Length: 391
Image (cartoon, helix red, strand yellow):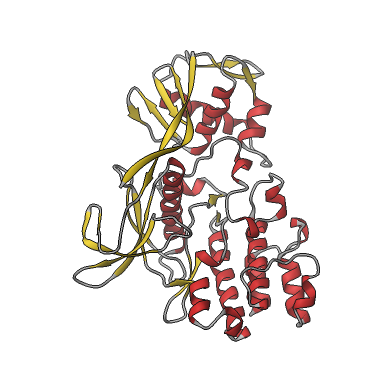
């Protein structure tokens, strides 16, 4: 594995703390601290306006956009932030009565180059720190070399290893590991969700280790002689199964945010699995406490709406492209695009103007229109509703 420098990151230094914005990591007195999502978002806003009063209204708008919360939520976030910084005497974060808060400590911000690791893996290599596992083939898209299928030398069991080459990629892997624990803790072990089994976030190369769930929809279609060659009923069953799985994730407050053919797998038995919650989002952070799960990877850099454009462009709902926060309806839109592609037998197609002419069945036209409606308020209310219509 070799390193190369090709991206930038902001490093904030204040009091006895260092905040790495790209890695979204707070280090106090030389020790990394575990802290929840909201306090770090408050910190980011205070750092951006160091020395100035940041009003409560501004913090609510930035940290809790489009959500009605009580004022105690902000007070709690400030309290946790002060606790992490060791700011018992409020020498770092000042309360400005009836207005808001001010970061009074001197702040130094530096833009530095971020190291990006290039993985020079090849088939047959040992998985780092997993001596019984050998890499078989890369699974990453394009020229990425950071997702690999591996095999246990003695048993022949297969697993998937995803490696982190950038701070952003590490953030995604941490998020995936955390959401996997929430899904498991809330829903139990399910055959339609690939399990995250182990992870290493302590030393490079950092990675997560997951169960192998089969080929993605694109490879599955190629193996079947092309998507159009697969019987329509079977294609619809795949979308219905995916919608059921996504509905289950939604039921416990987890958005996927990157629904696409590459993140849906089918094994040799026909089992459909949803994978890769690296772009996902937790709607109810109380589940972290209820399940005793640390929220690593669930933080954002900047306003919560800034993660709206993460995902794959052709499957992003129109409101996300305009900066709105992701919702259940934005996942439903991605399902609607996928349904259209499965019906017309072409993953390259999009439901652009005039798409209805390519869908002969009026019921399927109605299903696609309801799921992929450009206006979220007119879209199907849930993934479960789409599954019911298809079934």
